[in-house]
Amino acid sequence: MAAIPQSYRDLFDKKSFAHIATIGSDGTPQVTPVWVDYDGTHIRFNTARGRVKTKNLERNPRVALSVQDPENPYRYVQVKGRVTEMTEKGADEHIDALAKKYLGQDRYPHRRPGEVRVTVKVTPEKIQSMG
Image (cartoon, rainbow, N blue to C red):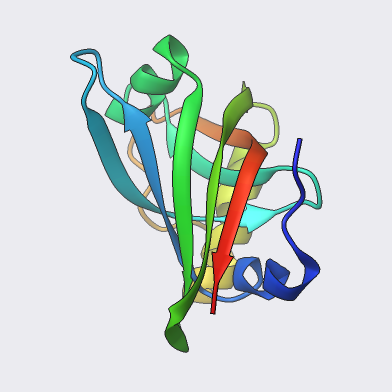
């Protein structure tokens, strides 16, 4: 396990999007921008059951992601790692916390009826930074 360097942890406090790459059933990469945070051990993002990235991660937990500084596009961190947990427990609260960070709203406004939220925890294995 690798830790995000202290000098880049601010990227996870800003409204920085992460681009998450998962591996599809045909072996090709699939990339999605997501809201992200860092709990000191895991990079976390939130999604819903049944989406492509959720299905990809259930089949293959390996991911790559990059987080770019919104104030300086030449400063970023790239992470390769594994999803070590996908949980529904606390996922509604997590997406609401991300909505507060990214939208300034107390609740995530794009919920769909019957949607089941999932918090995805990525354990970093290799980290590269620039800028």
